[in-house]
Structures are given as structure tokens and as C-alpha cells.
Image (cartoon, rainbow, N blue to C red; front, side, top):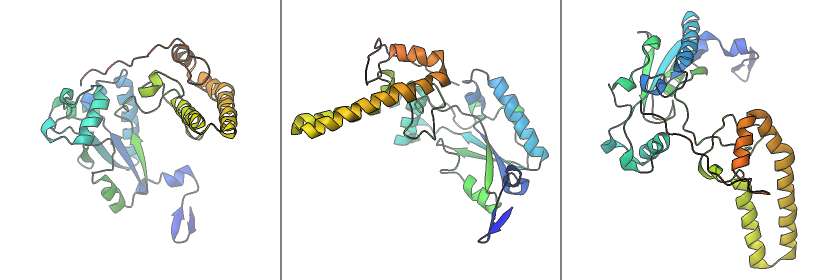
Length: 265
């Protein structure tokens, strides 16, 4: 541990995971959430092993539960979040899956908290926003935490596309929104904007810029981005690329891939 400017700076993972300054956060391991996961038993066992190790090491443990408000009390952000998660198109079709004291709201019986552990309820996806968790961690001097997996994210987060930064590559084979119709909607949008400016200004210089940019983007997609996606996702990406056009060169078959809705908890 290095001491500098009045701060203790960890140098190793062991120093970072000092039980006196570490907490385990078990996130949304609820009956209604686990019902929506294909291999919930394996996930529950894995979280149970992490939980057991944390308890043995005397690490502080906090549980998070997602709580639904009655529809009459839901605000705009909660309705929109529920619509995305439940994959419905109207707010009236939303169902409050995690009402307090409902069976789906409860933490899985295999992971029940001990009297020495805390449970915080939340109405957002964040473990910290609108909950006392951040205050509790700071008050205990906790500056590092582990998060036990729970709620799977709504499938709108990470499409089959390369991110704006190669430091954060795609991690999930999710096809939603514009990516159901075109593989590179951001490149396509920028290309159309610049091409529209060319038509408005009738500038040869601007047309030359557009042509160079368009060629460069297609080269990056063909030589760098798509080979990386094929290596990462294999046959699944091949099927996606065959069905959905790139938005640069080539169209594919133009099919729309649909993601099935999850069953209610």
C-alpha cells in the first residue's frame, strides 16, 4: 500500500480487497428475476459461493431488491423502463412485476440475508441512485465493492456493432432498435448528413470529403470491425450479417430479427 498525499493507494488486488474496506453487493437476486433466467440454478449456486466466501472473510454484505410501484404511482422514467424491460409498446400494458411483499419480490431462499446484513429496496436500475447504499458504504469507510450478478439487462444495451471506443468492445449479442434493420446506423446517419450538405451546397470539395470519408468507413468496417465481431460472436454474427444490411456497402436480405419477450415473473 502506497501512502501519498494523505491517501492509501492500493498496489495489488489483495490490498484493494481488504475485508475492512470492501463490501459485497448482491444485486436483484429475487425470485421473480431468477424465473426469467435460463440457467438460474447455476447462477444462484455461483452467487452463493461468492456470498459464502465473503461471509467467511468477514466482508460486509448488502442486498439490493428491485421494487415496482403500483402503476398509479409510476412516473415517466419508471413506465418507460418497464416498457423496455417487458417489451410492450404502451404504458397501459405495463405490469408491476415486483410489488412489495409479492412472491417475485422476495430474495431467493438459498441466499437469504443474515441479521448482520442489510437489504435496500430500489425503484431504478441503479444500486446507488435513490438508495441509502452509497451513504452506508461511505459511513463504513468502504472504498471498493464486489457486485453479485442478478437482473439481466434489458436487451437494448449492446447491439452487434463496434462501440465508439475500442476500449469498450461489445459484450452481448443483442439486436434491438435500429440495429434490427441496419448493422451500422451511426455511420449511415453521418454519411447521409454529409451527403445532404453536398446536395445543398453543391460543393465539390465537400463531395470529395464525403467520398474519402465513405471509403474510409467502409474500409474500417470490412477490415477491422466485422472480422473482430465474427471472431467474438461466430456463427451468430454470420447469421445476423446475412439477414441485416450493413448500411455501408451491401444490403443483406433485409430481414428483421426479433427478440422474444421474457415471461412474467
